[in-house]
Length: 178
Image (tube, rainbow, N blue to C red; front, side, top):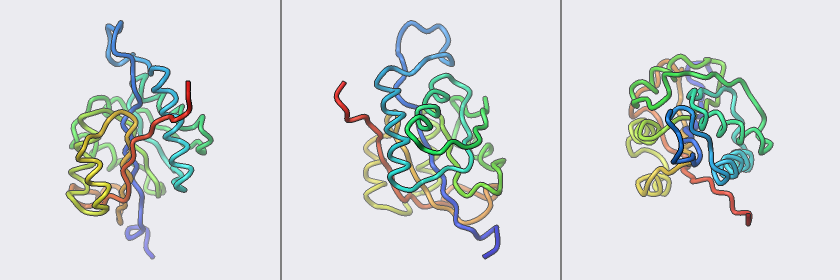
């Protein structure tokens, strides 16, 4: 199999629940206690489903970085994280530009970002292809700490809208009593 034809996995993760008040700068908002627990639940979910990540493209906001840290705190193996200001509140088109620059050696790429960009990107990339149940759940909403897992064959630089298929959609929530 040639490198260009290799199957790849794209994981789109919306940041976990962030504080809503008391912040003058949206970029600096921290996760809430629930958000930290949910981020850890996201890491557990990835491990449970055998999804190891080769590269992470993460917004520079505090809440996305803390979400990524929570994923690693769960026991999900840490990998190279690239902070990119362009992901902060990005459009689906901008997010796709960032993905095009991903390391071609990364078979599993995770993007940690914000709504509405991450949910819109998931819809545009899959365009109804893949898991019917996953699309149904995603249509019900893409709340904080939701994750869309997609499959794609080709180079990251060639990924286009309609070029992937949705494998799974899950909203990660901590179910442990507080």
